[in-house]
Length: 267
Ligand SMILES: [Zn+2]
Ligand SMILES: [Zn+2]
Image: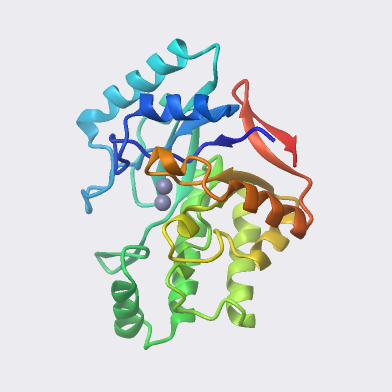
């Protein structure tokens, strides 16, 4: 099948290549479409997001590329919206990926995915060493932000399990994740299978893990295949394997953007 990737990062946030280099790579790979989803701005952590003064240039550049390459590939303008970002001009974007990279305790923000040490410290300090308490707090925030921001796509749903500090096979974890999933799928049926963690060698499986994929299928959610690429070399990283995985779970299709709409494509 021809691939699409709606989760890509460029030099406008923490990616390594320009949007045009990404487009040329997607053309080279004969993809159906590419979507840009640089990180939204967070005023409490300046490392990742698009600076407010660069938003107009980001929008202009992607719209320019849309016109320039219109005969070769569909190009979409999106944003990876962190739950704690304020998005003022939603109408600027063709789609929004809703994500959560932080846990907020009191007035303090702690990254969930930055380092194993930070995650462990927060679990020890605020959750009495219980990773499942931490997981519950994370999924609560993810759900609350999804309901509040109404994204088009649910991004890396179980990011909280990135460092393998919690038992994903425990019934407690499964129940926490499944309840959050049920609530989030009421907001949007589209949820990504994100191969980023396999690419960055932090996990052997993509987000979300297999039991969540089964829950998505059971609840009639729809998968958007994405690589969360920060380098053009990883534009379709592990996509063939992801298709096999999805088929083994029972999925018959994924969703891609076509003519500005989400459309199912057979696997
Ligand atoms: Zn992310
Ligand atoms: Zn991302």
